[in-house]
Image (cartoon, rainbow, N blue to C red):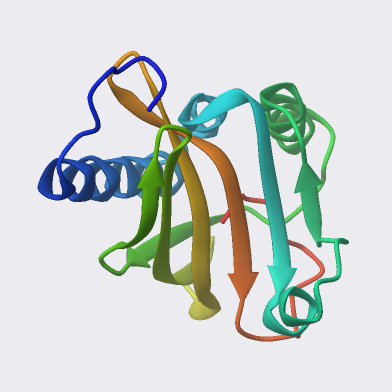
Length: 164
């Protein structure tokens, strides 16, 4: 993996990915969205799509960003330009399945559930699906090279303001 001449063992990878997933969820759930892009490498891909579209190989996503700069712009727009009812998320992320690892990085898959909590306290199941991730080792810290968020339902709320 980049930055390391020796491939880490499976347990180390599993721990690093589990830790990164937990930190990622806490960042979003704690409304520290300005920190969210730091979980990605500079030339990343972040896409939210449906299971049907993913299965069919359709490239278009509900959300698409292909750089950390685009992720930062999304958060700036969310904070300064978009008008939406205040809400927060609570992520539940399953344990990662490591699909492969080589000199280019690590690929993993993790199931997720996200509850949306509205300002009045109403809580609903907002999204379920899986993260299809490609990780890179950057100075002994795993960062996302690619995150494809595959939502189980084809019904996606038109107001997906906060990242999943």
